[in-house]
Picture 1: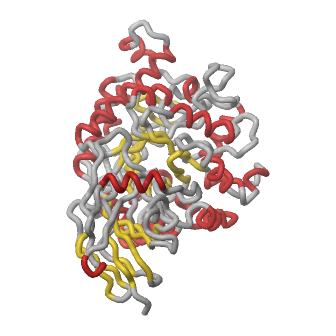
Picture 2 (picture 1 turned 90 degrees about the vertical axis):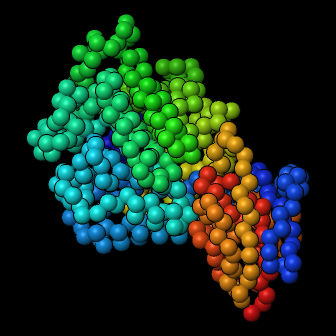
Picture 3 (picture 1 turned 180 degrees about the vertical axis):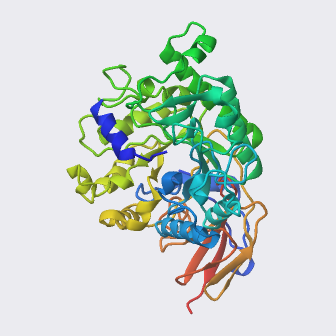
Amino acid sequence: MRTGRPMLAAAALALVTTGAAYALGPGGAHAEPAPQQAAATAAKACPTDARYPKRQLRGVWIATVKNIDWPSRTGLSVARQQAEYVKILDNAAKRHLNAVFVQVRPASDALYKSDLEPWSQYLTGKPGKDPGWDPLPFLIAEAHKRGMEFHAWFNPYRAAYDASTAKLPAAHPARQHPEWLVKYDDRLYYNPGLPQVREHVVKVVTDVVQRYDVDGVHFDDYFYPYPGSGGTFDDRAAFRAHGKGQKLADWRRANVNKLVAQVHQAVHATRQEVDFGISPFGIWRNKAQDATGSATSGMSAYDSIYADARAWIKAGTVDYVIPQLYWPRGLRVADYRALVPWWANEVKGTGVRLYIGQALYRVGATDDPAWRKPGELPAHLTLNRKYPQVDGDVYFSAKQLGTNPMRVMDRLAAEHYSRPALLPLPKGGEARTPATPSGLRADGSALRWTAVPGARAYAVYQVPASGEQCAMSDARNLVAVVSSPGYTAPDAGTYLVTSLDRVHHESEAAKVKVSPL
């Protein structure tokens, strides 16, 4: 959750995918897969261009808390809510983004039909009030229709954006279990030290993974609350009961680590293909606190909010991390140029994917000259290319996709996202080759083929003048990723079509020629 992010940022400163082989079928219209060995050989011989990565996650956070991004305000009609969401996705698709991280549980509430927690107030304006529809199937389907992954974003410990339970529905877990609560800084939190709290969070997440076609489960940077003016986070009773001789700080980190491990296990036990990842605060520890920390001097997530991302990465209890590197290059206390290599080194060789959280909301900010330069954010992506561990970026937040501050999204699209990209493959999973699209034909400029069972999407490439052998080595020739069997070719030429399964394995290619009209 990033509500109040400018304040927190200020506080922190103060304190070759293998190519597919293909063979021309009868009449040039139907796929005839060539051997896998030929594909591997072709891939090794093909150079790639770092400016056009074939696989890259390009995501955006869609915050619902306080109606930051969606819906724009409470009490909207179903049709208006749907139209606003579609507009966000269309803005994202226009820039070749391919993943959305949608906040479905801002504060122990639900933007979906749940028997475990009440309806979110950010739909109707009243906690627990039925909005008259279940938004989640629509939100997921619209993302998938555009070839995007859908990650359901949960806040694990926030119980209420209020210091009292009085306004909460009677069936709210916070009212049913007041012994779970800790009041801090005029808000209510579930006590991370209680096993019952961890069990409840795991149950809530598991329920969504069981009932909805999500691609990922996502936690943000909020674990124990950020230091504020609320005095002491009073978990003394839980510490006495469960601390078992540990130091308080170590016990708190262990509580978070246990929840992360339990959620990871539950997600994969329920549906193996669903990812679980976290977007931690951008500084794990500073070198002044730990010689293996980053060359920074801002707030430490390890020490201040008891979030130990290094432990999750080492234990393999996350599938990806998205550190929120919301600072510009050259900032002494938290230099983007120092943090990217630090995180790249943390995930190196672990199988945990690394995406970078980008501060789109800061572009044009008047309190920092660096963010008033339209080239600052694009320069972050250019720097990322130096580190092969960086598999993509996620932007906070969706509102700025529409406002396009300093036309930065246009610049990102032109300089970095001029072509679509396939999503990264799962690391360490079983290699698969989906079925090749069959029946590929060209009716004028319209390409048609038979749907492949189990395919989530299809990739369409236009063969360049240099020939077919390396046409699929990177995204230079990738012209579209579509969710259904059909594409209108913009030009005459030869086209290749592959199928993609739900975890983005790519088939061998079918080939067809489009004649000049």
